[in-house]
Length: 236
Image (cartoon, rainbow, N blue to C red):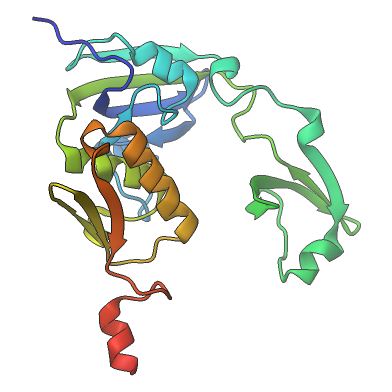
């Protein structure tokens, strides 16, 4: 029987994503492939991605292409700007004073990516005391090319939760443990996770993981100051 994936399924995927018409790789999950393509980065972790179809974990175009596809097969397709990172919008380009950055202790450099007013933006130019900021995504207006393999359908509850944490945070698998009982799902943190991120993880686990709907999701392992309990005790 052919197994196909549908909206709401958690799946594990491997992929390489490029800007169509160029060799510019903007994402890849396999370390060996990254090295072969000259896109390997020492400071990042390469591993298959666990996502929930239809939950906004993937670009709309990728989500649409994968829905209804077979497990174990590899697919190659393009994603239009409308279904990818959108078209470039001139209204998202702002001009501001260099003084505003200096007040915050920031020395803006062309090409630099910064979090500004709750959004990520690129510094396009710095001239004559003026800074041009671009809030468009760097790949806005570009057609993307994906090669994706659906490795498997994920059924393990812990693997689903780990997938959500990996997507939303910078934590590695070794930075936390997950314990599941009849009434609770405990995520024991060994490294800091901001309160707003905890709430987002909690909401996604409750909304997307069917096995979690009747359980309470709680975070343990860190005190109110987001420091490991062992460290807090040492300082007393």
